[in-house]
Length: 293
Image 1 (cartoon, rainbow, N blue to C red):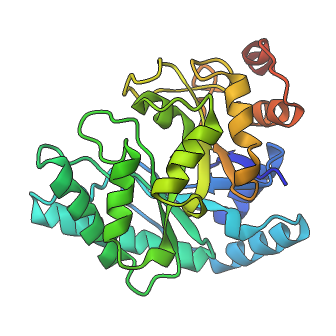
Image 2 (cartoon, rainbow, N blue to C red; image 1 turned 90 degrees about the vertical axis):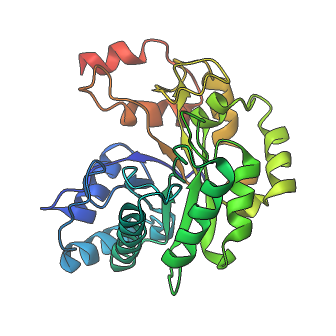
């Protein structure tokens, strides 16, 4: 079964129910959201009534809530511990996000590993693992380390770095991986032969650790380390390659999540991209059609 969705909003007034309704409007059967604004750490109380209502609608629509994803804010950094107060704040905030996931019934949360900011990749990896061991203690939520593009001093652009972090995490049951197609390409991986990439991943980490895939084209050529997402089929990765990733039988039960940019920063593309993905046919006039709606 194709599990396809996109990033959706999470508003104070409607919360999980609003996120679900937005996803359904796109023709999605899964989705991903931040539990508050990704640019800050301000959070409001979870409304249990809205959560229960959303879970009931998911049951009626045959949507598996265990495949719904939360994304942790990217403004906190586990990879650098030079400022002890900031580092401890990052640990405690991500721990509070895990607790919000538990309140919402969400099982998987994507996390950017962080940037070492000069302390070096080896120490950065140790800092991330130390923080994760604090965060995952007594947790029922699985944290998915996202593969990164390698911009600046980002940790996690190489599979070997992801492997090293996982190897240092004590609770192996609650640590996994989120692949990002734009990030993989920008990091230098050739995903045109996706099965070859999966073979490499499986040999090093284990394919069972892949719990989510972010589906994004890239505005830049492979190996650019830029991390600039593009709409499906309009970038350097290309529609056929992304379709092969989405429909790969080895990842059938893994949710595929679109994080492609709004057209002209105004129009959400997800309904149209999901339809195009379901039809497995690229529409080179898609952006013009979205603008015309």
